[in-house]
Image (cartoon, rainbow, N blue to C red; front, side, top):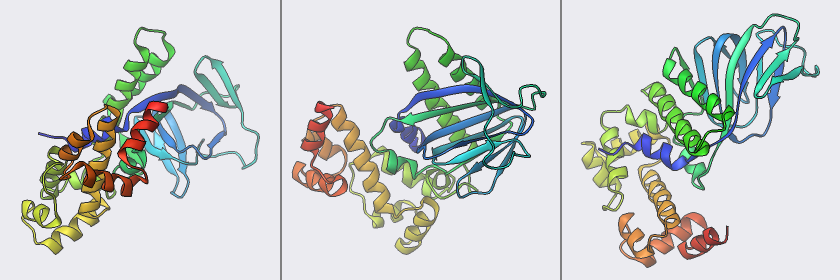
Length: 299
């Protein structure tokens, strides 16, 4: 059976960037601005505050894990941060290990943090299907994956980049597993927790080439058209056909990257002809499939 969450995580193509161990003592604060990339943190011991732009501060304690799929600006600090504008105290005590705050004071926080990137040109669409913030407590598997990523980052082993990419993909899937349910923010996870919408989402992902309309999807979900439309939009965050078209276009781009013929792609993503697919692709991305393929070849 198709797993939409696994498919989205795979298409995002998370790639490694930075992984480090951070310790802190006394009053400290670090600030990051205009990142636009995923950020994660696993607290090993102690407590700290994580404040993401536009959200209330989040107090993190030992065994907490946070993943922000698209971090813009945020701060991490001690529970009593220093006054804003205070010169940050930051010392790299060994490769990939950083000490924050007064180095003469006892360590009050130890955490593993990392940044990565999504090597997908469908990132904007796919990220909207994920929660804005994933906060999980007490999941040892997540902490273990972060430790493995940190260890692999430090080592100079064969196939290091491939291993890191797979570990990051596992980290994202495990985090999404742990954060799913009706309490999740609107998006794919919340939809998959809905017993009537989950089969519909699986069918869209499993067979994007079939004829898809709001009516057929509502019939699959055993709901009236109006009830289905409103429920899908409320739980997923987008209208049903917007979701289906977005997923079809994401797959089309992936197939173009694999040099699949346009006629075959049109059939696989639900268009009656290559010309109909080309029109839809151009409307969605502002360029025809051929121009996109040439852009890939020139990159």
